[in-house]
Length: 124
Length: 108
Image 1: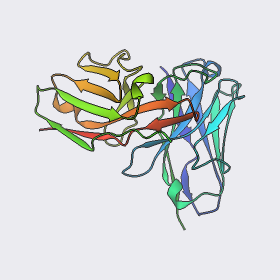
Image 2: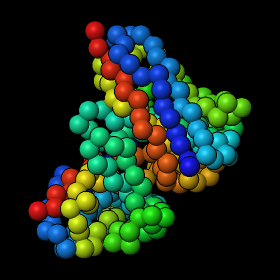
Image 3: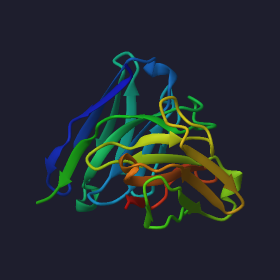
Image 4: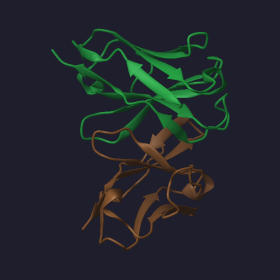
């Protein structure tokens, strides 16, 4: 089966850093673009960042640009999100999500596979 | 920036048809995707590219998109359809992916 499993969440103080990981299995990870999508408590999903299959193309939401970095290691079938200068408003469940469309993100598709999510709580 | 507008809530009796809208100027020119999310679970794709269904999604779920409004239609609604539904598009002008605010479907 196709699986995405996130890890690395937890409680962190404002201004500190955290790195999330997402382990993929059941499909050719290196053939797909992947996104991070987050969801604050009681709110709808918010797209955070995207990366093309080879890591060359990266895109960020305005709310995280300059603070978060998306990356991937295709040899390990793993996606990462480095989160720096965290703020209370970054508190959310973070999902790793597969893009069903163009692997270069020139013509993206739908988010067809979602992980179960990992919670990040930014609080003093 | 691109903003997708959904009604906060829709209520329907079992066996009836629910229609959930997603509005934005000229949304008909974009591919719209729809997700269902039940409490405590990750979202699930139910309609992609305006009107296609992933494997395993009942044909009671359908979609349309024209002009300024995209619509998710759920026919013969059952209690298990009660969930939050979100529309989503890719804004090519900004290379940002956008979700609607979500609609809570209540089955009476």
